[in-house]
Length: 218
Image (cartoon, rainbow, N blue to C red; front, side):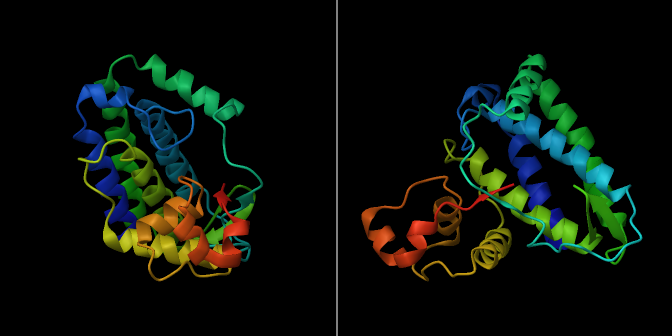
């Protein structure tokens, strides 16, 4: 739960410090500008609040890793929900309105996470999991989207190193295979999730795993 808070705070701080012009730059999410990604983070924060307020009585059906599904193709930006996010982001008109909303809802989500009982069970996406597992799953969400945020903004602070390491470990568990030790955590995540293509040398190091890439998580 502490790693959830550190990852989420780092991402929100990075957004808060962006100059207005950066919101019109492309993000690491196909078809989305930075402003669209930030709007998605607002929706993510709402989802956290909703889930933490949705208790469940049954036995857990997923954990922090099995919570994620692997899609059969990378996003194109044409999905109806993705397109809705773009329209919502444009409706803010001014970046300060978007950052205010993220700070408002995001701060509430962070407080709710700190106050939640890690052993409690919650329900989301027709699944049941503990609060601890749910928040651990979101370390992956925050970390990957932090990488998306800085994809074309190299001067923006990077995600916490411990969040990168934990996200890599989760991705390797999802893949059922380890990425080469020579890969940095960032490269393993970008290549593993299809955010960038491997070089010829990296593809050779990946071996049989290269044929299974990317792991598109949803």
